Structure formats: structure tokens, C-alpha cells
View (cartoon, rainbow, N blue to C red):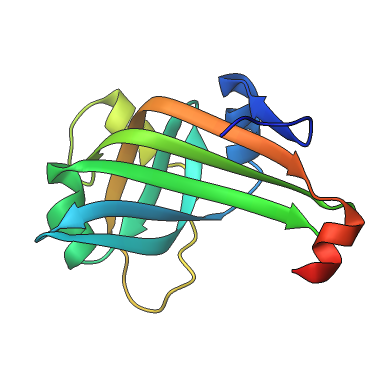
Length: 143
């Protein structure tokens, strides 16, 4: 599908800037033959995305499979929206020894979901893509 002037493909550095403007994203992965998607509060250090979780599906599956992480935003007044997707692998860094893992555990991440979120997962993307788009007012009114 060709993009018209209303869709702009974003450079990786702009995608990283946009990732830093939000606190909630969605992680998706395959688990037991199903595609799972979860909203998570996250932080960013360079290109590494960090989030905290409790024992369960994310902790069990994410370090063993490829993941996609998506963040987006929409301003209804201007009609401008954007979406950034980071793809790669994640690993648990809760107890990893080393300066990098220790540094990642200091990234500000404030889970909104209730309960203890003591496990740290870090996504090191192999690909980051994004798009910014504008929807004309007439089209927005029909949505």
C-alpha cells in the first residue's frame, strides 16, 4: 500500500525521541500458540526499553521469544498521530550482575497496575520503526 503525503516514515532517532515521551506501551509476543499483548509502564535508556512485571505470562514467555513493543499517540485537535514499534528480544535483568544491568534497574519505571512488580525485563531492539500521520478533519468526523 503506497503512503501518501499524510503518512511520514520516521527515522530511528525520531522514534527514540517519541518513545521517551510516553510511559505506557504495549508488548506483544507469542505464548503457547497464541499472540499475547499487554500494556506496560516502561522507561527508556538509549534504545533499551525497560519494564517491570510480576511472575506470570510476561515473565515466563518474554525472555524466550521475539517481542514487539508499540507506543502511539493521537492529538484529536490537530489530527496528528504517530506510532513507534520496536522489535527484538528481551531478557530479565533483575539479578544480572554488571554495570549495564544495574544501570537499567535505575531507569524510572512506575507500574500503574496493582501488586508487586519486582522483575525487570529489558528489550534491546534490533529494529525500530515509526510513522506519523495526519487525518483530514472531514475523515476524522466520520470515524
